[in-house]
Length: 471
Image (tube, rainbow, N blue to C red; front, side):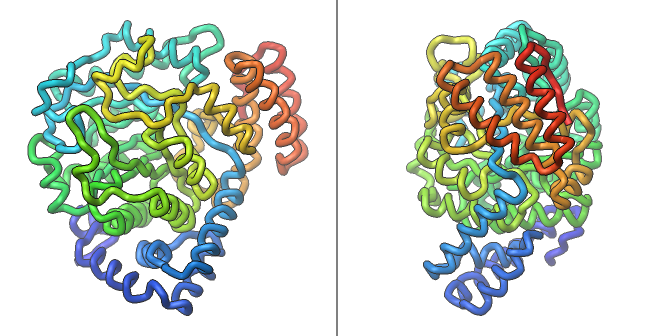
């Protein structure tokens, strides 16, 4: 039976509850009274249940859908303003013992070159990322206990944090590695990681097991219960996600929100981030073979309803998506994006894109500076901020600040100061000109007068060569 407080995957992600929710949403997709009642609740900006959110996703009334998108934009502005956090993935190794049929790293793939970065190669990659302007990385690696043991990941994290090149520094390392033990999560916590990220891929157990026919990842319960173990290991911030296109999107959307509800109820704090990747072609992977692939219109609505359902949770989109697709979802809910990304092992230190070891094709091929200028021209504030993590504002402490609205007095000035660092150290002249105007305008939007005054002083200090101020 469905039990949000259960530690068992098949009880907090309950197939029967999902199917009942799917039927409820289908039966009421044109029921104005029910949908309007949910929208009234949603306007309180405290979130929705999985069943309520699914009904908004299924709503087929055009006038109400306009209200849904408008509310998503309003909620995003209320909690996140126009700030967009920037990051880049760093692929350490593509050795993997799993058999995932949608990923080119699967062990049966004999055409992809296998590569694992040495610590010196990691240093070179990080310097290249620092020279671009990045401050926040997401570490990626295949699951292979021989080639990629936890000790290798921990050593790599230590190496990354140690590199200080010119004015560059990686201030937050998020980690996206396979499900592991509580002991290993404690080691990651002690290593100073930011968020532990693990995509569920799909919450449909039968399809999950079909898509993962071999290797440790085949174990649905071990994988699905990983976030609980991570929190048991002391990691405050966890990031969930599904790979849309592997299963019916309505099923996975519901499971994703049930997982968020479980973490909130059982562990006291929901996911720090939710990622929304879509299936992409890659070496020996044809995305057209996956019949559940979703359109841009459905994708945009998924993001909008997620923003309404989990208003306090960051939503991440990667360079899997095109410029046009990213622009659409930025408006209705996305708060973090990657820029200048390479999805191959060692890809940042090669002149070409080094795609033979890539995990997936990149749609947005622009440089980080081009992405920054694009965001600025749309009225966003590209942010390289890592202050909350380094000030201990993680987990429930971070969520309480978001829910109270006080986070704006931290995030707005921190975003402007890290943008100022980027403009001073890395930006092209055209980007710098646009960015300086945005900073001047947005400085006036810091709610607290004292914070605004201090931020202005810090910005002047950054211009004069000092770095790393934060609230």
